[in-house]
Length: 396
Image (cartoon, rainbow, N blue to C red; front, side, top):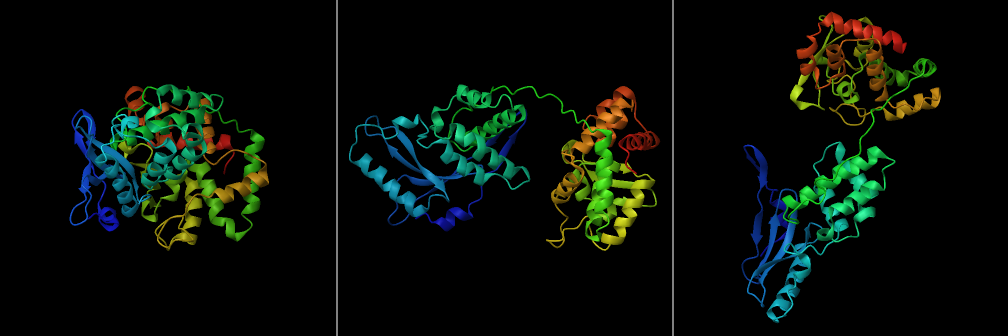
């Protein structure tokens, strides 16, 4: 008979790539067998879920049906077997009404909230996982979680999206995560169509980050004050490097000392994770940046990472949110660390920096395309652009 251990060991099925088409997802079934087995009781292993079903024949038309019992591991084999016996008893009792008539082929009696739990548990462990789980718990489940999964229509998702039309970013995230959730439902055999497909997102206006000259000075003053505490030295260098290089936070955090070439004044093989097609890039380093890196070398040079974790050995540090909170408290500035990049980009645009240099410095995916139109920039042009921008940012 099926056991919890057997199902636990089974790996999720993989997508089968198809040229010019979306990948096909297979479903594997583990059937109950041996002494005491219940005929028709089985567990389906999908792309990212494991679900118990009871297959039976409708006594009215002799057609085979599949009754969904529940998700593993939320439902154990023992509990699923009990539910399967109830279904079997009803069928063998010649019940005239099809026990699946309310499920419309896929027997989706469960609400969206119930399926959302299994979906969130099945999400791949990555930085965006917690945020997506938060969005489900905060917006999607409270909005349409009470509805039967099979009853949800495109209009229901549009209504949920429209509730947050004044919060454009949130509304668009709700739409995106609904698309992903219902796609998962389709891939695991819970639905035949994606009701979120075709739902339009709102137009998001580009974020204009208005750093006032007084705010930049306030941040610089806060950094100087916080630097007096030796415990803040690494944090101060990190924030300073964000201003000096305009790199993304994770790009700095994941740097190793092997990637810093002091002799050639280069930061090599920087991972541009947001756009995987670009792979890695090399950036030139000027004197102020090198001075900060040399000081950092004396503090963390005996480790692999520029910013090693003080909690987990062998790993790099996480985001410096707490330290930035100190800067905000000290300076009165409400901008985020990522706003440094937004403002740096806007300043370069105002200064007339060529688009190719801008794209390269910011690590944008359009660098290749822009270079075809405007010609490639050289290292000298990029260093000049950074120097000019830094002067405007008033960061030394």
